[in-house]
Length: 125
Image 1 (tube, rainbow, N blue to C red):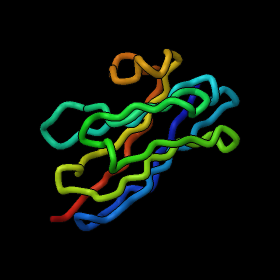
Image 2: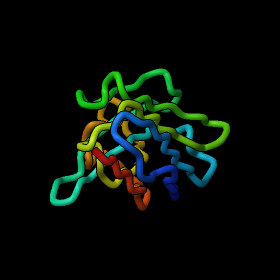
Image 3: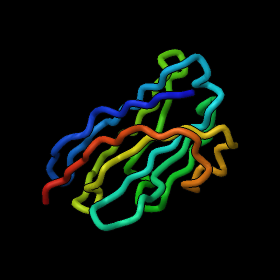
């Protein structure tokens, strides 16, 4: 069992930055690829980024490339999402998730075994 707790969301102006964190419980964090998803009001949950178990490999949705950076610290059981140049359309609840599947399956919602409760990111225009 893995428990995930996100933090770092908030209100930011367009063009600003936020760093989200996701702390995981348990001793098996390094055996999971970790992903970030987001869900805006009235929309489906969508993939943002994924990172492999070692942190060597990452993959982003097109809208995140060049602006967002996913990273992890296995010693701290934490995954991060650094978000720069934020846009109004980035407004959503952001969720982290853990998957035992290889990271290249991480674009798919149903690949994930555990989810956090989400953290709200609001970008004002």
